[in-house]
Image 1: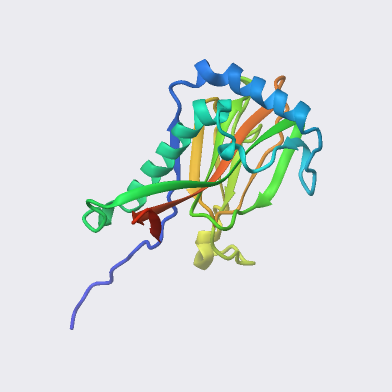
Image 2 (image 1 turned 45 degrees about the vertical axis):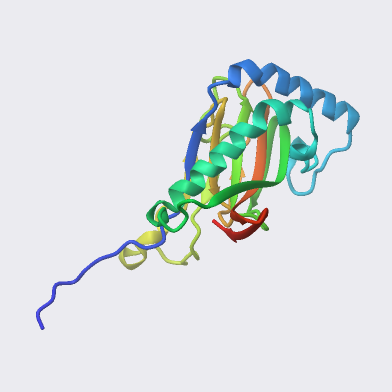
Length: 220
């Protein structure tokens, strides 16, 4: 037998970037809603994070709010498109099926100057997102940006045989109206933002499922 070697890259990690064309129209209303929320809910969640205000995780369940009316639909549609891309090789399997997006958690974070979030991952969901509501023009990948850690075990050595350990982080440039979606198991955090304007973001966790008889039966 004289067969040549073959090479395969397996299990790539899918990230999606989406842009809200209505962002500039809704930005002021979103920020006003967040400011009023902070007045009504003055306590802060500190934990290991630094110089920030974090809301409760139930914005999506508050009917009639600016979040519900102006932003939730964009987030849901983006999660749906993300799942379609992830399952494109199996499109015939899900043809004719009802697909539903369930927002499990949604919240906003208002960072003060120098505020940041340490690396963490989200559980009990398929996909996570960050939506940039407000940033100064001086924002960069490492000034107010979000970073993601490589989802494989680290090695203690960095030699020719462990080349995969060379690139341990991925960075995305933050922009107002931009949303990034990623699988829930990926560790991520945020760099401190030292710009003139406070950094404000919205995050959400979601499940995308096949629906039968009004109930989810398979998570995508």
